[in-house]
Length: 134
Image (cartoon, rainbow, N blue to C red):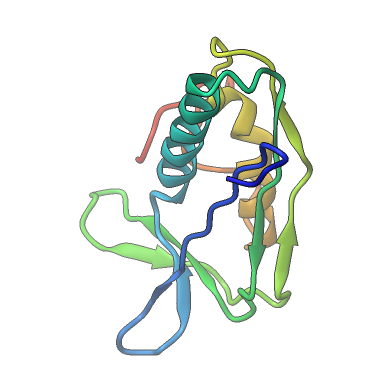
């Protein structure tokens, strides 16, 4: 936490032991959502107020793959290699403690999936409701 009230966090990509290439795990949306919930709780407990602005970026990920689960849940598929080194995503605002984070994050997650060549995140149904890991 900075004097300005900003809170910053980082996480590292997984690395494929056989190929030595980085990857985003099939549950990266769960990780982001869980961490963001913790940050919002921390900010709320220190009475820092709303809105809370969130800036999410994926840095240094050229050559990364997005892993997705198979239909049977055993194993995974891998996306194409990412050509760019940075995915800078639009900022978002958490307006209150009642904000449904998974709904708010859906466009962000879709943008990440788009970068890897997919139309959208597989964690939402056709109506945009969170369904979790398939």
